Image (cartoon, rainbow, N blue to C red; front, top):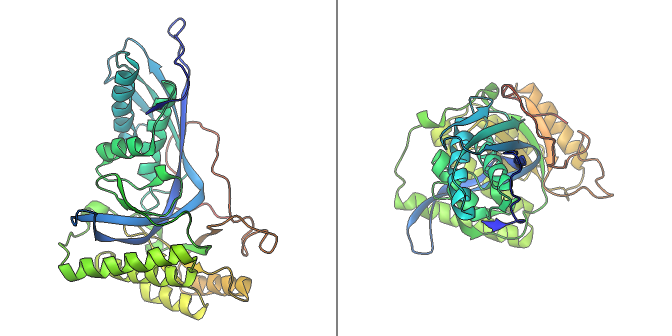
Length: 351
């Protein structure tokens, strides 16, 4: 962790409130088992960043209290509480102060169970808030290490949207794919009626060598798509990855979703491999984009697949000032922090 500013001596036991924020994502573009630089198998994923929803955290230290006496509001944020306790221990050691308890307050507007990284967002925001209360600025690798310790696996939300192949169970980057994804317009939707997915109940299969080779081929193609800005190639990779994911998730709407994408002239589809959120991916350079997006939305409605949010992976330009069909498509990620008693229902905020 890097000191952000000298730690102020507490006066009268009153310490500054630390704050932290973390974004969410819209599921995965690619997920599977890959080979690291040493040829070792690693579970890995590439997520689809989405600006807008996120988690905010506030942390206040209570000097003189036991390290375990940490309260969290809302009380169900147990993973964030574990992350805060781990962060307190590390920050206290780095600053030469005795560890103590405190109060953590979380605000999150990310739906639970859709595969959008809600728990990781809470965890990262909590770690950043604790570090901020000690006037430390944690490096992304340090945040990832604490996040994995707190929840066993985490999403790469601490990397601020860079396209990377990330080993979620180890908290490390397997490959930086490039500076940014190709421009995409994403029509978001929720499969299975938006019902949360219990990832711990999903069957676990040991991949064969042929599976690993297939995922490595997808990795190569995704690397090329990022390097060349090829949204069509990225869409094909995401669709292939989503199709493999159906061997575990088995969404009954998958064939309808891919057919809708094909008829609308989309580049492909992506589906959260640990949730119900999905997206139809469009290349913003295709002719008649607005018509294609509207056609996609009508088809989703006709098949009973609820549309959620249409957004972009790029900053809108004069040619595309307001995003497709749904108003401003690329929103800022800064939000006011504050407590919230419970998570929202499993719906995405609509534009």
